[in-house]
Length: 293
Picture 1 (cartoon, rainbow, N blue to C red):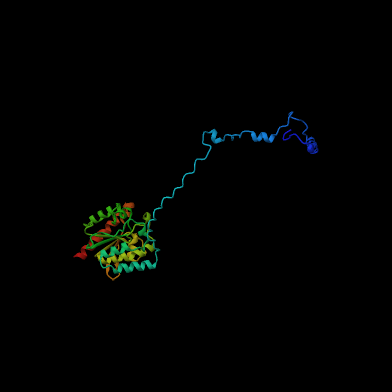
Picture 2: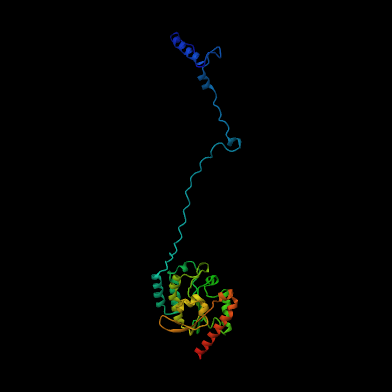
């Protein structure tokens, strides 16, 4: 019986009690002639190898690889300097624009003031300031609405398809960019060529008004509805305005004859209306002749 050794006479009573307990438990059969010390057998048994794991069967290592030495994290690059926060269009920004525009006594000073002005959100999405093109001494000044993609890339107004059409329109009355001056109400391209908001227009208005005042042309041409509405202080649509002489009054009170006409981009989309723009440019040619004579 497992765990039993030769007992002394003093322990026989205890052994009888143990045997009675085993008999009641159903242990009533000897397995060998001599008792076996099961505890000693277990102690002398060689240590069993652990069962092979799934990783061992798959040929993968069964032990973890030695821990890698910790390396210090590389230093993070210094953060890029933050861009100036875009201003919220409000009366304070418009007032600042009026102040800067009023202080400019030359076109060069005006351009510098516009380049340093951070009060219009459009500046932060545009690539370039589109100031003007042409001859500032010319008798004719043309003002559009805002730069497009091509104008934003080159920093000059009317250089894309609409600009090519404008060149042909000027050539039809004997003029070109050397005998005309071209600008926009908004000097920065709106994202996606969207329409400028009223706030953006009001903020930029002092700059274009001062630009017109410094150039002091004999005749002003408003290319498109937004230019006409902004500089002629009207709410009428361009198809009602075009072909009729109006007056643009500068901040100093100078009255300049103004002809609203259709924007070249509109004419590219609606070629049938080119005849209307042709009539308007003939009127401009006649007005220039009368004022020059």
